[in-house]
Length: 99
Image (cartoon, rainbow, N blue to C red; front, side, top):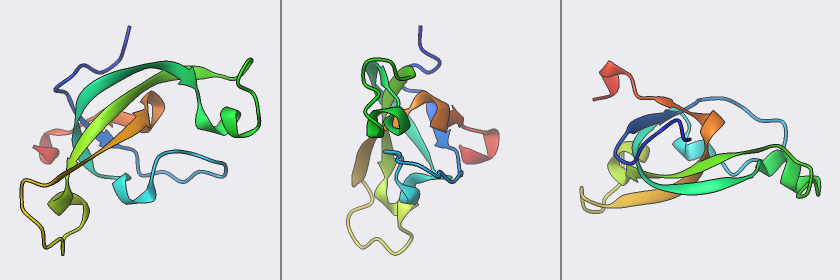
């Protein structure tokens, strides 16, 4: 059971991390669309400490962002996108103001 479905608009939490994470700083606080589910896997913070066998697991999602949303001075095409993988706990449903 996953929290988000393909097509859901999600916002990446704008939080800091003291340890390793695959959640890039440049996507934090931005809204994108879930385009793919990935199976539950050991969270990056536990994986970085070698806890692949006994680490905490959670689902991951591939989220698509418009590059013009990520970088206001982006000079490429407006249709250009970036897709990246996010763990479930870094995502929240997009608010009404994000539509």
